[in-house]
Length: 266
Image (cartoon, rainbow, N blue to C red; front, side):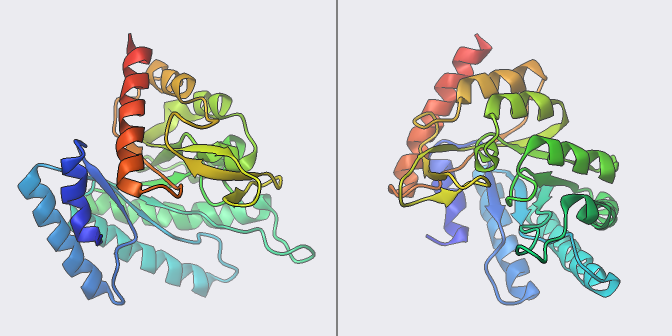
């Protein structure tokens, strides 16, 4: 299935909107052409593109490298605008470095915050709100994410709250969601289960694997309750990172999520 096919697939599964990660294409023009095609399909089906999520590294060791990465991500903002997405999520960074040559989160923070502010300012001019997510090992826990949000301190910058990803930092999901829910501008829902040999390694070295929402170890209902209590009423993107047929697993996860959300709201 191509990215252009995803709009129809999401529509057929009964979703209200669709989210995209980095668009395929070797050049910006190829990506822009795909974005236009996706937007045409989305508008024809009444399926808004609710968010565009891209890889990024806001920590760079030189000003020249920072300038280049900020410029690259600003072009991603342009793609979000072409898609018609009101939100764009970009990563912060993925590694502190290898043992003996690592850079601490505290040392990274000023550079990440400054580069993020520059992108948020450009995005504001384009009518796009930028977000970061508890994603990418280094900034998957609630304490670092809250510090990032406070350090950036830009009205056009917010948080994409991923219910499942806190497990990747060995953090209690409900505690983390309850803490950050007031800052959430968008939400991802995913689930994990304990694993022995497959899946992902957490920050602390545990192994977990993706599973269908509501069928794993993440306390989905309490996390949804925390979001409702905080007044969140935006989209929730269904994610699946397991090994089953993706469309089947997504459909089951959507049904589980809707049932849990209805129970929480009642």
